[in-house]
Amino acid sequence: MAASPLTRTIFAGRAKPADKRNPTGPQQWINKEDVTQAAVIAVAQHLGQPGAYLELGGPGQPTVMLALLSASDFALLEAARLANAKEAAENGE
Image (cartoon, rainbow, N blue to C red):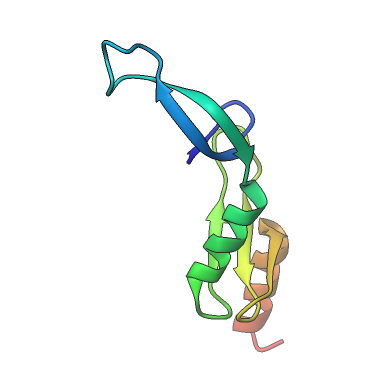
């Protein structure tokens, strides 16, 4: 399993050493499958506690929050919207 630094896609599959003389060096995909959505869902479920969230982002990328709403439902929320909801909750609104 690996994430592409160019497309931010999470792939799963089989890989082999790019150079047979260096088996611990760079790898070359033999076959791969886009598992981004399944991986994100698995992370949401791993958070475990409804109300838990994970901040996602990177250089040059917008920040988003992955929030676990219930034991099986999650939402990918814009950071500003989540921040506003958190502030409202803290203020008793």
